[in-house]
Image (spheres, rainbow, N blue to C red):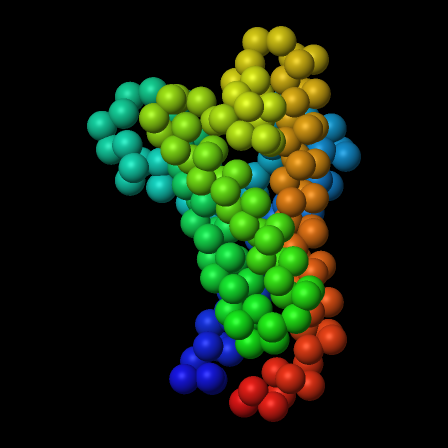
Length: 181
């Protein structure tokens, strides 16, 4: 059972490194002028479309389909990372893994709020949207770019903090992990 737990935790942490890389690419694109809406790679865009069409199969508003798909994609991704954080905390029982769970829990709560508000209210409401002020399709370009900047940086930091805490927890808990096997 211990090896299965370690495999699950390792898989979720590798997933988070890929997820964090996606946010790094998004930030890179922001630095290169892509500021009208948060950038997503092609594979993430395709997955968001698929999830949106799965959630809203008869919806004719394609903006809403994509919007719900994006929020669901992020909710699932952050739930996967939360499983890894909790598993690591269970194994190591140290402060770094505990704080990774706390920060990832806040981040996951944000994505729960964003998804359910996008689905039921037709707009994302959370800290990273300034409680609904930022939406993916605006008419004021300056406001749109400013709020995209806020959301891109908010999510980069929301991923950076627990990711760094997990790496530090792994670094300091490596001996315990080896004995856990």
